Length: 203
Ligand SMILES: [Zn+2]
Image (cartoon, rainbow, N blue to C red; front, side, top):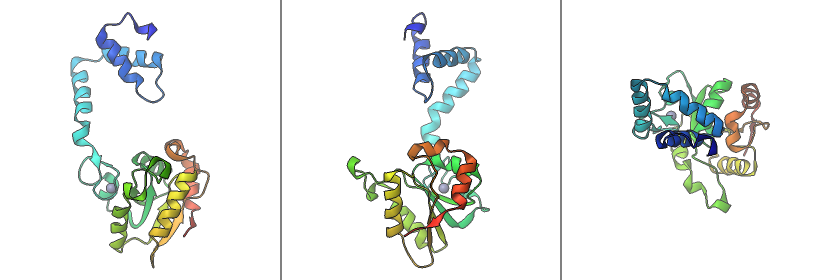
């Protein structure tokens, strides 16, 4: 890193730390590091403690697999959510995106990935057994499959629709127009709300 060669080792390490973040290049990392250096010792301590305790404080929701600080995530803990509809997503970072769209008032189920046979990722590697157990409770009337619109996302949705089919349960697919895979994290809210509202039955 040429531009930062005059920095002490600790500052170099701080810059390298910021560079690990998505979308942060060398100059932005340098700017962020210099800004952090202006914080008070107390601010630095608190932020450092926050980072250091993340592994023990943030885990998976026991029910849906979403990010959770306690046993249950904020969505599962909210009694106002519609318990009869579950939106199935690939990863936890897709939950806040769908939340912001306002198109879903039910619960979630985070699979923890998608079926990719070439990478050796099969159904048994995803949280499908947990989903089946939730359906067994009998409260769920609709499953909205919001996996990606690329080949693997579609294949995962097709697999789930076939495997989870049962009387009294509607299985629907979010309408197309959603960017593939992880890009769902950047889908715009209006498009996503439309896609959620115009979902269609599958299976
Ligand atoms: Zn949850």
